[in-house]
Length: 566
Image 1 (cartoon, rainbow, N blue to C red):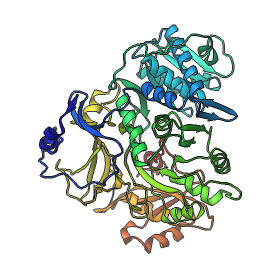
Image 2: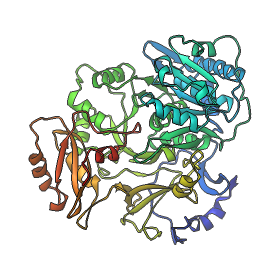
Image 3: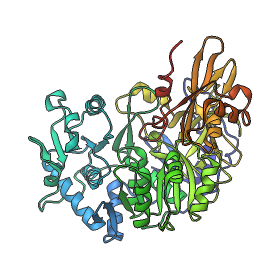
Image 4: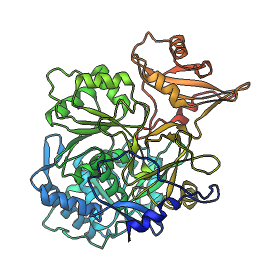
């Protein structure tokens, strides 16, 4: 439903969150926000029955529509590079049409959930697009998940089928363990009583039209958030969510048709799925598959394939600087280097700028619940925004809400709330979690932050991760930012350590690159930059890096579990 913009000008700032823990507010004026270039026209629309938000005009209705548009305007262009295999958009369309027809023949219908347990490979993209063309719902699962979690996800979403790698067959539930699970399709080696993915895409049959009419508010993907606390929840990403996020990347990072990106993060999680796969399809770009990240392999692939954009976590960039050999590699096409999940040390930004002058390193803040991108540092603003995760995306509404339920003034801290066409409408069969996490279309992030008068967002901590050391509040991100600037540290995380006297002390976990760094050296370094009560009481060195969920966020509960209880 579209809404006249003159009408909206009268009521937009009256439309604020309310609920059991929130006071109804009245905004006297709109906040200042970063002026994006506005490549695409917007209009206010009513989504999900009650969410009045700015949306892009003329957008595709579904992911399949977005893909078809790319095929129409760039049929001979490369869509996927997977090792020695190169697939054009025309060839990808043929594979998708055949796979979709195969799914329909096997009884898959609109709304059915189909789990995808595949790594970074061409079949993942074919499966994703074919399932969407049928009107069914993809449920990607990370290939590193253990069998119990896979069984939980498949059971929770009542998946009708699963498409998986043959090597992972021992992690797939049997038919009699889940009543809804009827269809088993595997890539690779033949398995008894399991259909082949090649057979799914074989023959002359094609599904060139959508099997059942699909609305942009229909579910496209269910992503189970491993989160930083608790049991996974199935975030229901609709077509309108994913399309707006893909267009946000296009607008904020100034993508043009033909961009090329390496998929080195998991395809099965929101960064890989939206920030790379659908964002590249949106601009008829090329997705270059990388099964697993290694520094030299990544740099060589980026040079060979003329990569223009990518998204990595800061630790990957740090490893590129520490261990990468740039000699003889032409990386001049690499224009955008997105990162998120942790701060990037200023020294790393300067070092990358020296090695790759054309590269813009851009911090971004995102979540599964917002189909990735919430805010992003604009091109050309990296040095200005070293302590910021950027400005809110063009169709998004960011606000900071205090403990009293009132919106905070510029510079004041509170919980980050997010609303827009990219924000999901809830979790799969988790009504209580949906009620708790969403208020009037706003997602309550659980992150503590502030927004300055220019509209730039700063994050300080998770709401539950603030450390209270004898009454002194410590935001872990402040300590982590200081440690990240140490030249011998790859990455670090700060958590609370139980204490009988103070309640909590500060414990940091560090992955070091230089072995001559010891605990006292880290404390002495922190004393030069932090208040005395923010100097770590405990230091633990990690050899394998920080534990992270597949979206790159540090699992602090896993670190706290390593600390002995009182």
